Length: 224
Ligand code: IYR
Image (cartoon, rainbow, N blue to C red):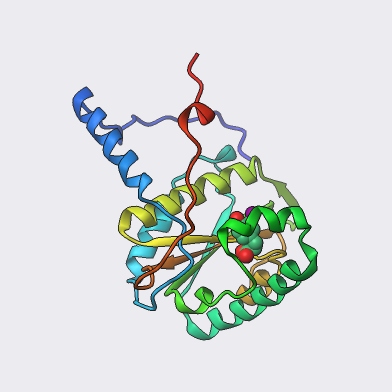
């Protein structure tokens, strides 16, 4: 471990935005994010790998605990592998929907219309498996602690979802539970836990989304 203090460089990336531009940019971005919807019906249209790479690169800029960057992304475009992931996820989901999930949870999901069928795992051009590194393995095989892992990976995932939306794609945050099969199918080590599986691509033609809305502002925002 380093025993030297910090070294500093100038903040070169910052760009000041004039107040009127700031208002316009904030309002435009708000409107863009108001168009984001989680989509479960995907087209098989392909999406260039470079787009996915740029979105993941944006996500990997996320602030995170002690700059450990405790994440690993696996971008899956291979059809056979997507099929195996679908089969494994559907097996877990069958158990979830037919008994493992408490009634209260199933009631909470009723408005979303989800069930154990996950065709999107094969149809969408890309699946992005996000792994959280609970700890690192040091040179002598010892466990090195990571900090704020859930928060860090959650922030990175939020940026990834935003980047994909900004690029003109839709996504689905899919959480087959448990997700341990992803370590096996994707060859990831035991210090990594699957965080979620992000499905992304174009929406299917005529895709529909649940008729649900976000909470009104007074409920989510307090000014003091
Ligand atoms: N993992 C299941 C169930 C599910 C859970 C929540 I919380 C959702 O917001 C949606 C689905 C599935 O993916 O179907």
